[in-house]
Image (cartoon, rainbow, N blue to C red):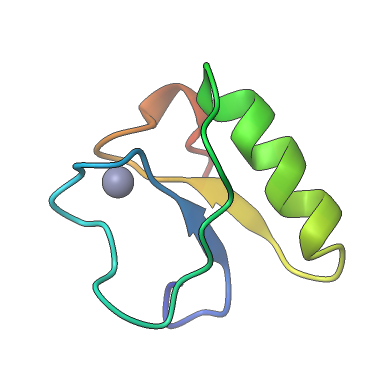
Length: 60
Ligand SMILES: [Zn+2]
């Protein structure tokens, strides 16, 4: 989670994966399905892909 309140989706093994206070979403074939799942779990939060490990899902 970023300081602006957005949730970031990471792949396992990402060096930016949070070490605490994170929600494990499960295993996905691609970041887009992971982002979709994150949006389903947190419908009122902005969900964004990690710039480093999920760049194809990173916006803004
Ligand atoms: Zn990441």
